[in-house]
Image (cartoon, rainbow, N blue to C red; front, side, top):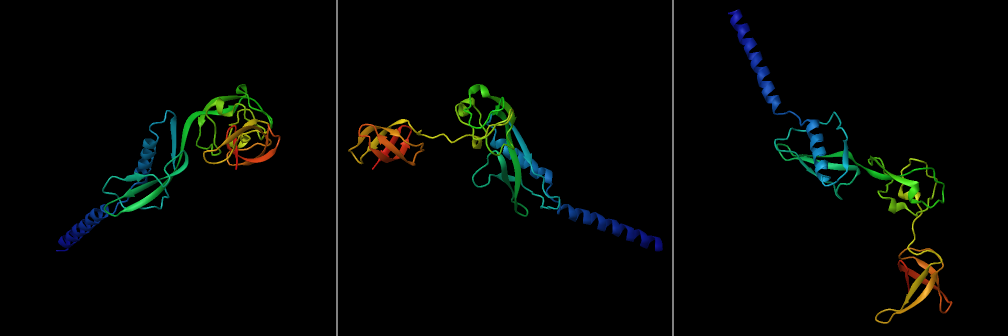
Length: 236
């Protein structure tokens, strides 16, 4: 009798363990690896058309994060504004059995040729084609921008000293003006169907929308004119 009771007790215990395991199988969590893989696949697809090597670094998830296992394929989507290189975010969502949405951070970079200095260049130096070169590097951490062709920087003036091997960024260069001081320009006067054009000279640098002093070369009169485009200003 005692042996039968012990046997029944052991069998009952085993059944409870097996049943608990079966019940627990319904509560398993979505693996972090599957989520990160979905994010990487999404980013790879977004940049499929690039000719440059893609470098993706997806931020690991907090180990305490427990999400219900998804019975349907994970869905991924772009954040508002779309995805670009540098720091970005990808949305991941599950529809069933318990819907959830997660936003995962990642760094996206491209290995591509960027402009670097071939030698030390001092502040105020106009860049010559021989002063710079293209070097392939990972752009993930080039947060201040970069240039991809020598033509973009040739003739531009440095605002600060540039060291050999340093990446040339937009903030290092003086802003190019559409109209330069001393440049001969066309002055457009009048509105509607009646317009008068005359030759003039700019007395100050300016970009479209700026008001700059100009001199009418025929009348020698000094005027305030608004920059329209390269070589053209207007007065009302």
